[in-house]
Length: 161
Image (tube, rainbow, N blue to C red):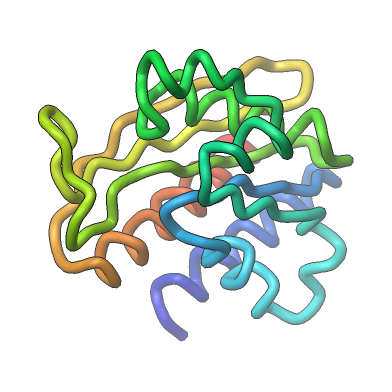
């Protein structure tokens, strides 16, 4: 069992024990969090849906992220990550949502946001939302994989709090 498979098993257990379902809103991972979750047999009992919002327009149209916030702070920001998670929660039947937006590389870096900059947001029904900055190392695949693992760990943390 890989580290990611073990984390998905923890997510399944944590969500199952609460009777919760989760939603994802993904940019830099392009649906990898959802894919890793749904690799697990029986995931339909706890995985509700995933949004792949790679473009800024998709973030606004599907999740309700304000275009002004994206223009002001950039798609890779705390505000946008948190708004993505809140939008995923609002547009699903889930009790918890996790969102990621970042620069996986090899290009795309901008001043103050090097490759490996990822903002992760989350939202829990009735409990609020938050975000955290991840500064990850490695190539594109490594950054995306580390982002998936961080998101899964966050869901476990939220569901067991």
